[in-house]
Image (cartoon, rainbow, N blue to C red; front, side, top):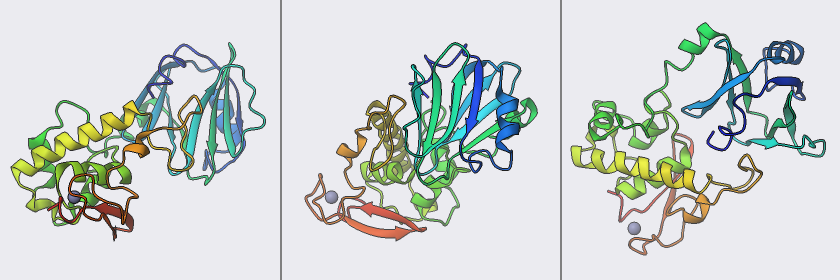
Length: 263
Ligand SMILES: [Zn+2]
């Protein structure tokens, strides 16, 4: 979002090529292309893991990268050779937005102004907003029996936290991922809300995590994976205590933590 914000507002959409109908389903490629042509992008925003291209007139083009999606901006418009290219949005004044997606779970959805108002209403709060603090987090966890990590990943509870960032935030907060959410104390909630914010901010500053396919909008790898303290480090020494980091499955997700540092 931050890289596309200075590039897209003001641009008028020209030709739209849907190279994989799964991206826009159930809307057909033809209907999708036709409904976007001639529309002007007013703003690039984000809610949770959804990128929003807000169009003049109130429609919103919502893009979700899912597992392996990569969005890039190509000023020259030369893109024929890109692997796993699924969607190309060309702009009237030149340039193109390219959506590559190896595993094809990504989506592009055009919402009308009414649906755009309600589409995101079920998402939890944004963790980087000021109003998300220790008290708010404790409120979200209170009375919940599920493991704290599972709640952090639940987009209806908190929006935008993925598997990597949940592992890293819980390590920074010294909280074991399997802890029952309702048992988190006020002090722990304060540490956890601060850890979530610092983890996300650090990851954004390093352009995200490129474990395999992820690239930023300029085609460059992120570098946050170089700073992982527990995620994908099973068997390696904990940076805090030199003990061994372990891996478990929690809610179907690979979960990494230090048994000594995380209580
Ligand atoms: Zn440790």
